[in-house]
Every structure is written in C-alpha cells, then in structure tokens.
Image (cartoon, rainbow, N blue to C red; front, side, top):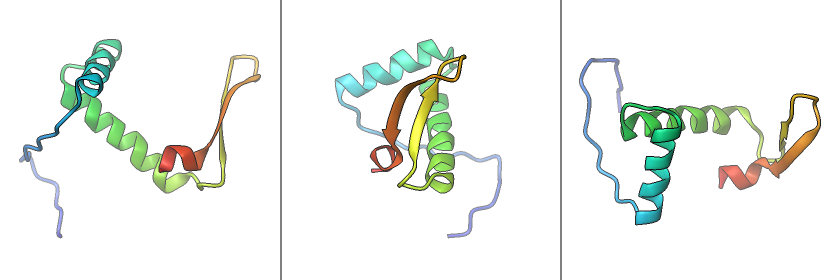
Length: 80
C-alpha cells in the first residue's frame, strides 16, 4: 500500500469496553488533549517508537530524580 502525506483524513471506528473508554477519557483529561483521537495518535507514536527501538529482552526501568529505580518491567510484557 502506497502511503503519501496528504491533508486528508480517514475515519476509523473503535469499539471500547466501558472501562477502556473511561481510561481514554481520563487520559484525555489528564493530558489536556482536545480530543480522544489526539490521545490515540500520541499513543500510536509512542508504541511505534517503542516497538522499533526496544529489544523484547530489554528491561524497562523508571527512575526517580535521584536515579533510584522505582519500577522495572521486561520490555516483552509491553510488546505483547
């Protein structure tokens, strides 16, 4: 499929459970996003980067300001 940059958009419809829709609404509010679509587009960008840059055997670590690890998770969990 040849994808070229244009100013046209395509509508995509998703079915969400009530819980998933609430999570999306909560993120929209927390991120002060203008639309739910903006949240989905940003999530897609992040996931695309993660899936192409991170090896499934890596460990993802979140550190606080002092450099202390406060959360660790295998990348494969986030890629499955």
